[in-house]
Length: 382
Image 1: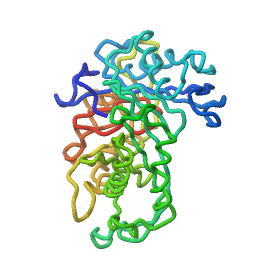
Image 2: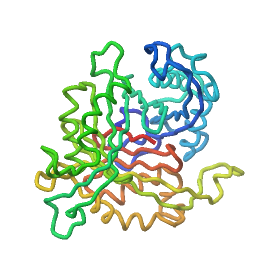
Image 3: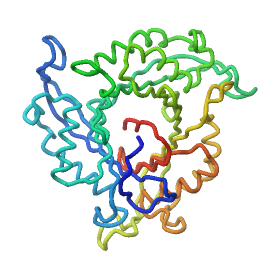
Image 4: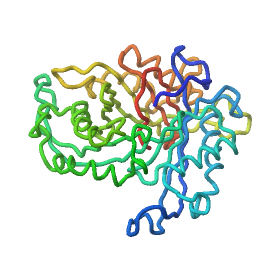
């Protein structure tokens, strides 16, 4: 996700960087979708553990104190979705699809807590499916699929571990922009399932190298292989995201490649600007989730943009300063809050990783900041 030009949380480390705060709040609700045909499972009364998400480029002064933006945004989201928690969604929406629930949440955020500069609102009805509404009001439906397969990379340097035959539990996310289609009812999860099924039959429990057109099955080329086969039957397809492992993968949109590498670190901090008596002013800690996004031209021989292993190795000196350390002791207030820390990470990592274009940093599940200065890729599900 690349946020629109709007006020930033603080002055960014570089003029072109945009800081977007993110928050996520779960809620439990029941629903039924009456417009679906007789016999469809979602026409019956059922329930979900939903997750509502919001991303906003917040202006200075919106939160009670500098550094409190993420928590304040989470509180605002919790207040907005409170009427839906342990409720029947049909009492609030005539047709409670994920897209309509997301639109309801966005209206509630704008009207109640008054969250400004909303870049994206999302709703996940399961861990594997959801809808994101962007700033242009486009609904991006997404669905996650898994397959088990072997592969090896034939063109890596001698001794590289990926040159040996091995396997992964791969995951693929298909992103569909409803604005790109012409279907009367738009794309739904059933349609995504039907489009994916023939590919799953080819990929699952096989060796990827044996498939025509996939002799060098890197995450980038696998994403492209899937794109080339799905786009003709799914014109709404906007991105393909391939997880090679739980912490790394690649996006492809028909023209551009993006990769990400995820790490976690356990550190202490305190919010230096919290008011006296606020618990966040005390030393406390989080298990932070850090996701580094990189963009580079595809190496046509190796079949990747950047080696995931190289990202981890090159970033290691920065990681060593974060993990199991008191972040509030970093110089110049770099560890005073999650946004300041994200900018510090960018400043330290950019010389080591020239292809870096976005830093996602979460202090809790779905709650943190996205610092972006490139074209961007879709935000991954929580």
